[in-house]
Image (cartoon, rainbow, N blue to C red; front, side, top):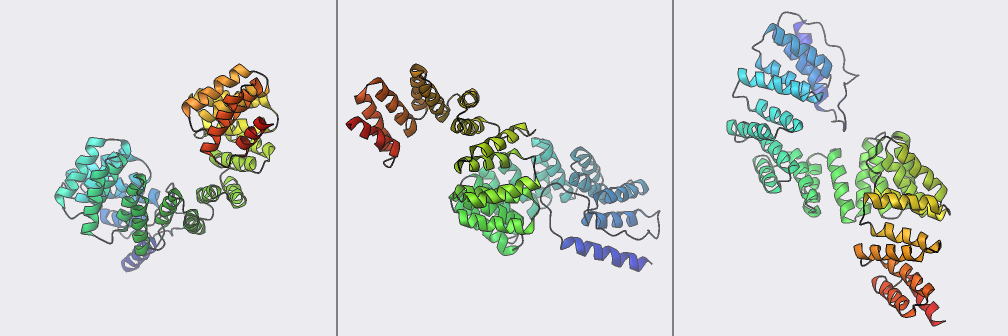
Length: 432
């Protein structure tokens, strides 16, 4: 009986080692088999061993029960406190995790992993001094502890201290050139510094070590996207979609690359799928609305913008959102709603040149020349290279009979964009 329990525990742990790490919230694994009844229910070590198997199989609630029972039976079981702390951390219960790591360290003050993981929990709680102190202690206890250098480097990176972050990442890789996670973390640090070539090099190395690491594909794809290499970005996001075909965010990122390369049809397909999978993310509605506008389907664009505004997530309801919806209203002839949206855009961003320009055009078309001129002046104050504002002001000067000023504005617009048809048309009208 004892031997069969041991074999079953080993099989469960091996199964856990080959499983993928799921992106997003950690869930209880519903497919884990039930473990056999313990031979000696008063033996703390048996509860600890079974709890460890549950933990490896991501059955965190079951693991908690067993670690707690082990602690009840043996209140001096340092590893049971440590493992329960890890389990609490996995469940996002960082205060409870810290309390268990505290006890584990009190019972065994020389266990470097307890300091490292307590540091991780303190980091998530925003406890800066305790975080660094724990990582430092872990490294002091074991100067070759790669994970502690990685953890401390990641924390420095989050704090924007790139020099110290790179120093720790480099040391981690010096100690273990095959430590995949550090390549990903260092790659993300390079990405955040806009050093995309080095970032891509690190993600390449991570994928060389583990060709199925979805995090490396995701972040390499983001780096390619930032570089403007949209096809390579799409190829990486293809891998993400292949690995997680029901994850809305994978489709959203690929759609963004299609959108940036102006492949609106494929972008639309991906935003449709993202919305189907997650109908509460307003980012997808906003971008699909923009595509509808680009296709001159302004009614559907407005529908998507309105749906985005209704959703509880307000992250992307900003000045740019109101500019986009205002333009769609304008193109449907609803100048009143367009004006309202441009006003909202300027309330949120008083230096938004394009919003002044677009509002000025409505004033111009309604015959309110003085307000139109004031808005064009504001637009050019905040963006002296906004060709549309020169063109619109040029036509206002043309209406007022001020030909020389109109010519100067149309000419300036052509200097900014030599192919601007509206500016050329304005100059031709002056010759008639």
